[in-house]
Image 1 (cartoon, protein in one colour):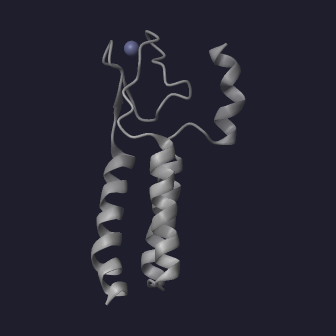
Image 2 (tube, rainbow, N blue to C red):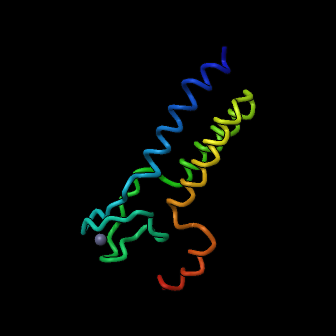
Length: 109
Ligand SMILES: [Zn+2]
């Protein structure tokens, strides 16, 4: 029973929410410049203003980690687990925190 609720309600909801998040555009509160990815510093590259982070990386990562753990614990189908993995990767790509981007940190100094 619990497995069913998780697999058919909890996980699809979660996947839907995370997908919506990974597609969201981020906007500078001051000049309105939009970004596909959250700037590393959290500041607008155009005007230095604050970029609107509606969802923080930490909370999103915790969310996806929980989902993956729950899927493992309750023996969700491989299909569901695979979707979560794909989603995890697409979320990572939303944030400029991968190693390639970090080498560019000098650009901000
Ligand atoms: Zn700006």
